[in-house]
Amino acid sequence: MMMNLPNILAFMRLLMAPLLLWLLAGRESSPLYGIHPSWLDYFAALTFVLASVTDFFDGYIARMFNQITTLGKIIDPLADKMLMLAAFLGLVVLQRADVWAIFLILSREFFITGLRVMAVGEGRDVSSSMSGKVKTVAQMIAIGFLIMDWPGGTALLWIAVAITLYSGYEYIRDYAKGR
Image: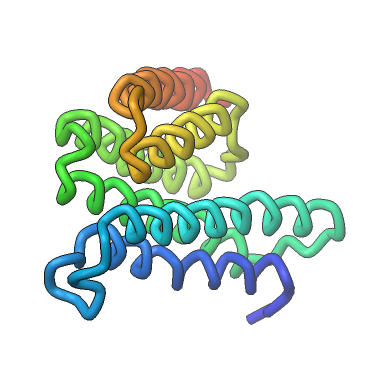
C-alpha cells in the first residue's frame, strides 16, 4: 500500500463524507441540536468545499509528480462517490433536493461505474471524459447552492442532472463503439 500525498488527500475525503452527512442529516439527533441551522449550513458547506478541493489536488499532484498508485485508482473514485452520496442524501433529508433528481444522478453513477469496471476487465482505457469532469463541477456547484439554501439551487441541480445523463450517454456510446 503506497501512502503518498494524493492518497492521503483521498483518505481525508473518505473521512469528510460521513462528517458532511452528519452535518446535513443528523441535526436533530446529535450534540449539534440547538445550533442555529445557518451555522450548520456553513459548517457543511466548508466541509464540502474542503473535500472538493482535495479531489482536485489529489489528482493534480498524482499526475504532476507521477504518484499514481493502484490504491489511489481505487480510493479516489470511491471517495468521490461517498462525498457526493453524503451530500445528496443529506440534502434529500433536509428536503432541499428533489428525490427524482438525486435518483437519476445516483442511477447514472452506479451504472457507469459498473460499465467502467467491465471496460477495465476488457483492458480498455476508462479515463474520465471532459463531459464527466463538467458533470462533477456542475454537481458540486449545485450541491453548494443547495447546502447554503440559496435561490437557484434547484435549477442548478436539474442542469447538473441533464449534464450527468449526457455524460452517461457518452460513456455508453463510447463503450458500444469499443473505445
